Image (cartoon, rainbow, N blue to C red):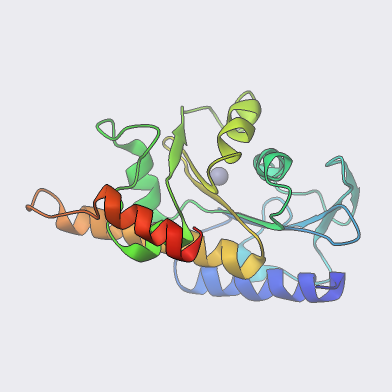
Length: 211
Ligand SMILES: [Zn+2]
């Protein structure tokens, strides 16, 4: 993907996510890792619905802002994911309603917050880990997120929202959407008796689809 294509894709997905209610106000941010090195990110204090291909933030390969408007204040989240996932080229961070609600639940295990409810969440998202709460602007969880990102493409920030990476922007967005919709299923089912995929079924999906 050329830089021009990456700019257009960020704008297209930003508008789509905003229009469908995945990011309200100025919450949420998107990034891609450029083939030529460095990153393109959504700027700070802008709605994902109002991104402009000529007005995105450019960071160099060390994560230093080098061109365009000031990047999102959550750029460090994206860089923490990229550090541990060299084959991934996009990161999506949202404050989407159900995934954020899930991030607040105190009775879910931190190493497996979202139950394996459907084959699609296993294939597209995998096991979801959670990091403790930190106030906005506190980067102390950067190393923890990088460490979890080695084995997880989706990390929930407690009382905040999901961070999801993917081999492409298409894949990262699809995984963030799948996470949100599966979190919604979790709350829709609530306390009603239900079954989850068992370990054998999860192993079969990983074997067949390499997820
Ligand atoms: Zn956030």
